Length: 159
Image (cartoon, rainbow, N blue to C red):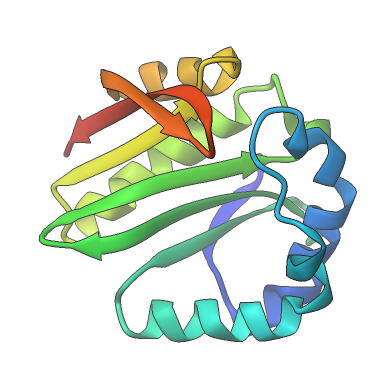
């Protein structure tokens, strides 16, 4: 089973490969990151590491046995004991319980390591897999939202 690790500088090449390999797969259910993301990846990675060092976000990678990144689970916009949860799992790892296990582990870290008490998440209505992961990990729907112009659902989990 892949291991969840706090993002480090040396994860950059594997994260970039993960994002490139899964770009079309992700774009089917979440907004595409755009060409700028890939063209300026190193700069973006350094900025993420600075945000993490400041305690504003906690970025995680899900690392497979061969050192490859098979997922990302992030806690962003940390403030007042709350954060927004976001995650991406590689196409080759989808449907095997990897997302559920990774989100559950991130929720545990949020409570025990980062002192958070509430997590929020959103997903588009056309992403039932993500809705299922959130339901299985203790999130409850709290209402309709727009996700980059698309209809979606907001979720919350009290830790």
